[in-house]
Image (cartoon, rainbow, N blue to C red):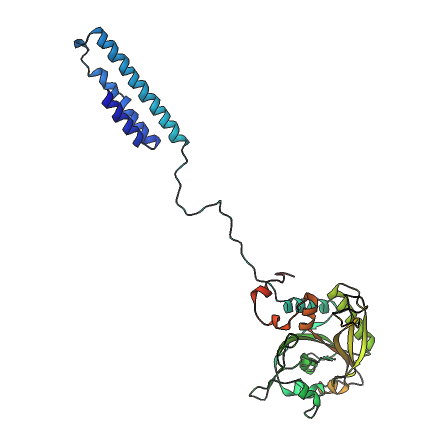
Length: 339
Ligand code: DAH
């Protein structure tokens, strides 16, 4: 009995699943089980009453022990955690977030400007970065002996073309292509061969705008500029015009914007003047209209050149122009993904 008990205990310890435990039960306590058979195989005739009694109670003890051990093992097997399936998928792990790209501050400003101008009935016109000398200079009244040509250090290409130095280069193209009356903007990249420092870049963005119609006056120009600035800065813009000189406008102006940080009081951003020089503009010079085949006696118009790069720096408080072209993700990802 003792040997059987030890063997049973070892078998049960090795049985880890409910099925295996059941096999152990059958092996020892089943109809032909070795504990069950113990009574059958014993020759009781040779035993005394006392011995029979002792045998019977030992056998019962063994049966009880085996039954209890089996029940405990079954319960333990049922409670044990189910075997892990190895699918490699752990639903309790935190998810991996996806990083979306963000929009470049120039893109953000450009999109905002386009939508503001579209709201005022302007068309957004694509324009080439690589230009003919004629459109960049002659067509906008900058003949070859004009000093303004030297002021704009031009990148010349081998084929007599150039990298446009301003988006004004598209004025005559746009009028030729689309005809008049016209309300259009052409945002884009411009290039000047300049030494790069915190406030100068050789590659920067402008947004040129043009309105040509009958009876266009400076009042129309001011109204459009005020609408633009009020919408960009979410602030009722106060503007003023100062005389400015550009060969393609007559009269020409520098449109100043009252500093929204100090409300005209004077602060470090506006260098104590209360005003920020913002948008050069003017009434289109008759010679520019003529270059486009538009009769200056019939039509007039205004033009303006918004410095997109400068505007982005003002709006987002960017201290160094070189950050805009550096492609540094630490900078680029500080701007919104959506507008
Ligand atoms: N093209 C000029 C520049 O790059 C900016 C400019 C001045 C554009 C006056 C205009 C304007 O349309 O009327 O400096």
